[in-house]
Image (cartoon, rainbow, N blue to C red; front, side):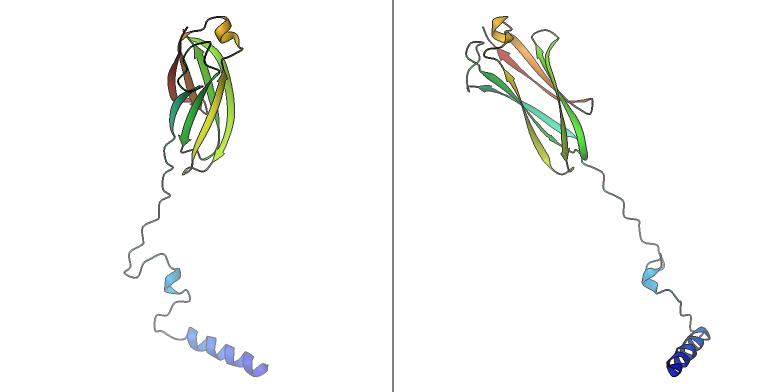
Length: 156
């Protein structure tokens, strides 16, 4: 054991006296590249932008009348969300009156596209009873910021 320790001490003493320009840190660990130029710092790619598009579907398909439509489905396709976010939807009756508001929490990765459906019942509600026909608007907000909107018409 004593012989091994002596050999290590001699080896270290020999290396410390060497003037060949050897470094205690291997070249691969230094910040300079092989040609003496520092490599560029890898920038973190930017997150994709938050994008949303809205569609409206009538149930049953093709129906538009207050007495025919059972519900309206507002569909939001959204991408670019990093982590979790709050999605707000507003259904605006004809005129600037908010008929209904809802909030949903969404958790996803930035490269994933999510599709969210919001159902607005029509049959058996105040909509046909009060004759709320005309052009409606559905607005979507992501963390309080406007994202997308669409319109639909309910006929008398």
